[in-house]
Length: 119
Image (cartoon, rainbow, N blue to C red):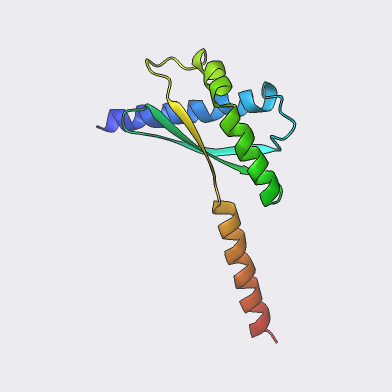
């Protein structure tokens, strides 16, 4: 069981690195924005990859980027197929990673509390 999780982690990281390169260098849609892939989570059978990303900008930019990624899934899988040496190429699903937004909100609340205590 431990071998499977190690292999899954290794493949997830390879998918993240390769997709990052493909998106940066080969995806030519001007609405993609500045995308950072934060992590990839593979299903236990490794047939589905949930790809989490962040982007600089407002909600409108986020929505455009999500549309670009959803439209580009076939292209991204096509480009990824030669880079991965696995039997089945996983399906790709993209999700916005709101971890940074959440941590920023907590930081702002903590600063506000700290400022109120100092007054």
